[in-house]
Length: 96
Image (cartoon, rainbow, N blue to C red):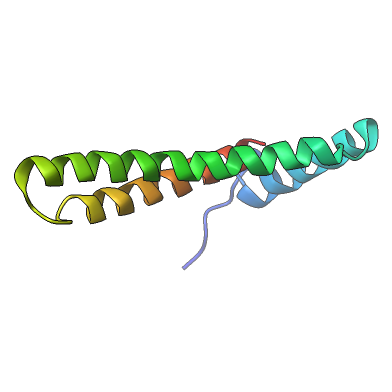
């Protein structure tokens, strides 16, 4: 079984190496980012994860009170919010 030949534009390894090279050139040109900027990025990352979870909890509690169902809706919506928040954070980190 042979693997198909990929052009340099299609090869994932080549793409990663090029992206790493661009980031390195950017770092050499601009230098290290300030501590305040790093702290701001960490704060944004936290909010990206927490906000969907809070929305899930509030929506779940409202549904549970409306239908008198205990935590039947809160727990799944909290997990859904956590998953959405982690996915959003992952996409945000990949973009940066």
